[in-house]
Image 1 (cartoon, one colour):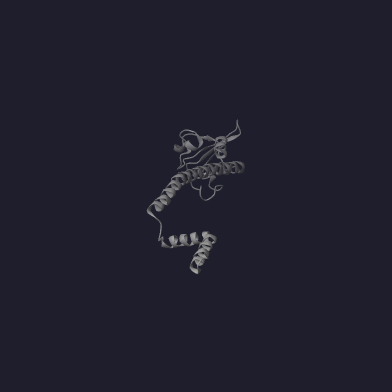
Image 2 (cartoon, rainbow, N blue to C red; image 1 turned 90 degrees about the horizontal axis):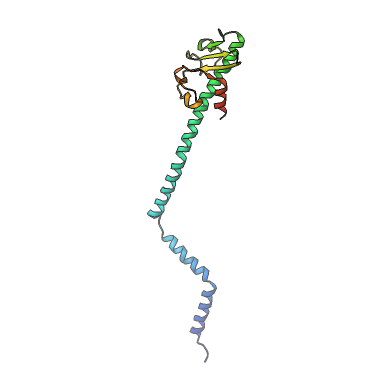
Length: 166
């Protein structure tokens, strides 16, 4: 018995569907994607958690960078003061191997001028300078020398340079 025309048509459709298998699946997926309107609550929560983790890691790291740079700025000011004292000493502006804030004003940049609490002293026996400076920053923590912020301890130039290079 020979197949009828409807049976032949059905057989051809089945063969065509087998050939188009991936295409039909693509159409089905496209319909599903069209029906989605936005993010689910779980997806949104996952994004928020990831951003919170990144912020928890980044914020302390940035705080440490800012603190270290502030310390380096204070040390840079200290080295500038010592450099100004060396120039003032060479020019004869210092009295008794010691330069105070008033004597250093001409040799300091505008940021450090008119600081009366600065005393840079030269030690003839060692050939090194030391600095007594009433700074607004925690100089003890930066250099490891006690009582500098109160202006009672002189910090040797080598200590300042060592802290600057660390």
